[in-house]
Image (cartoon, rainbow, N blue to C red; front, top):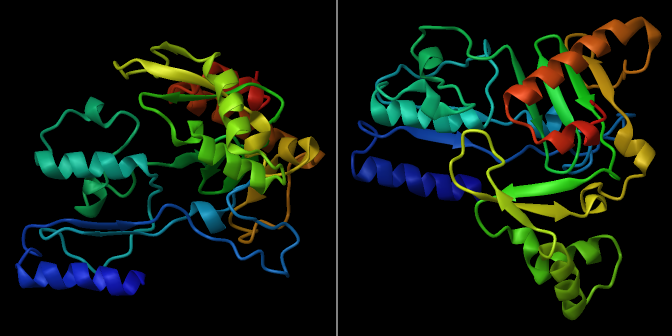
Length: 279
């Protein structure tokens, strides 16, 4: 289906001679793990821990003024860099970098001006753990599902719909009818607050309390709190967890401290440090 509909787009680009003035970016939401039987430590869906099966997504960029056919492996990039790259392209490089917020444009890399825009990346999924990857090491920090969790948003979140809540109930084997979902949501909305919670965002946001267990994917508290440390060069399949081993305590502490710094720099909500057990 993807081949079919991307093909339709390529046909229109050809038909209207748009390849000469159009930048095309192909990227995905997330990858997929197949829980291969030979792996002792497996990735299931998008639950904690997030391995590169899910986090390392394809990125293909076509720009009419840049020579194609190259594969760039000298830099990390993350999803906010797509926005920064588009802003850079549309402005012809004239927009101020502060408009990129946490993103970094990939145009200097594509033009061959620099080899890298990032030496590490931070990633994860909402309500679960957090991961920090460098060229040598990946550190996946567990989380305490009993600690507070909030959604910060400028619009009405999809999760605050009775239909979504009922769906979560089915996922966990709880028969929650529509009326029950409405009562549940009423209890949540009564605790909602509003204010300016996101650094650099001048629009007021809702601060909405979420029920933590909804995002633990049925895992036990012990499993959720487990952290992982991997050598990316020697352990490509992430099968030898080094976290908690005395001989790697210094490396784990180094990655933990770096993670705290990056989280603070990117405006991580204060309660998340307790949730990640990083106070």
